Image (cartoon, rainbow, N blue to C red; front, side, top):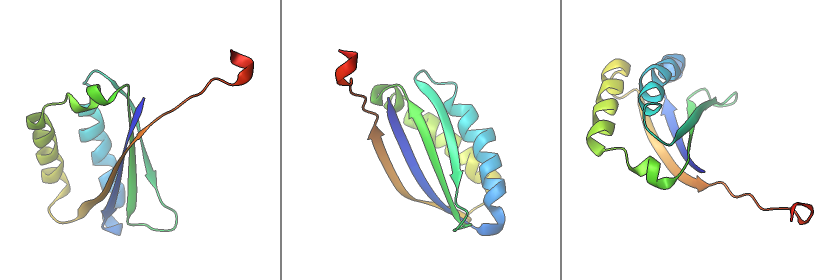
Length: 106
């Protein structure tokens, strides 16, 4: 499993709108693709402008198989609904989930 980790800065008064539209547009769209395992959105209690999305994919190949044209279309739909200049993606990372057998599992 791989994790797509995205960190956004959102205008404080629009954070809940961002989270709602993210679910309605991005999560709904991504869930239609093979390999999508789920998504969580984390909000900070200390920084009301921070939103983190954690998206789980079964493999990097599944994640990267989404056509760029589809991603552009989804992003345009989100931007139109959210409005211009009210959020920014300022950090993006990828992680691979590792699990090792314990000595008792062998």
